[in-house]
Image 1 (cartoon, one colour):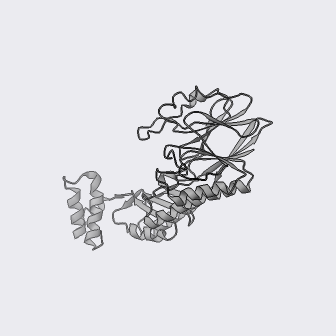
Image 2 (cartoon, rainbow, N blue to C red):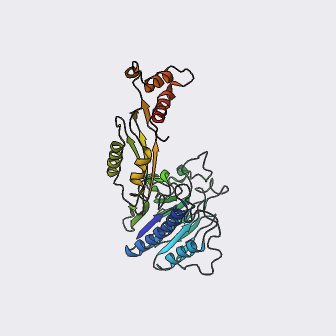
Image 3 (cartoon, one colour):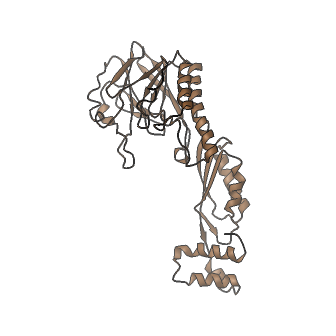
Length: 363
């Protein structure tokens, strides 16, 4: 039997943090399209079941286009059974107002619900809340002779910024679990649960910001019932990547040199026109270096779906070389150097701006 394990699709996400209104609308459509493409992949690759481990949607209000798109994609692949466990972002009655829910869609509740995927493969799911999360493991009853899959949505450990229920993995050890299909963490993780089983977060299906960089997709499980064996493979499936690139510009004193360094780094990252790219300039440059961040940004904006440039580099200055300089520039540099009201760690930056002003450059 072949199964897809997917989670954290976050359809109808606002996406306003990184995109303008038009691009956000386009990106929202791409997220829905990726979900539909996943169902097409399942249809074309002999997938028997799809486990959606929470946060299929991003908010309480789901557009009719998105809701009907999901229902249509599920209904158009009737030979595949979809098991949808709601996460902390999913509304409890997302599909409640629809008169026709596909026969191949299964859901869960706040007590353990089990489904027989085959004679030997059993699926157990529970939608976490403050009342059932602590006792969840104790109320799970499985047959050790079965291949047991457990589906939950929650974080691995407590976080001050995230109030989602915690999955106490230790409490699920030695309970005849072969695979825990989890959701909530937006990065892929596959690790040992105990001597028998493993737990897995597939990560989000598509990245939505630069905090979700790298490859995203889903996990395919290939289960050999006779051998009681599960093989898993992560499938990179997102239509776009978010790439964070740090570029050291130490010693570069011309804008064209910085552009070449950025280009080389993005080539190293295998960045394509589909990708969203964030570049951070680091290192140290001379205060008189010709560095125009606007020109650098403009060079790359048209090459990628989204391009952001941040300059976190600093300036260096050799004060001795200006000790005998009697020009206006030299006088200015010495005055800033000896000014006790300017913090030492800000003097090079102040001198940099002063020199640019003296040269008539736009600040």
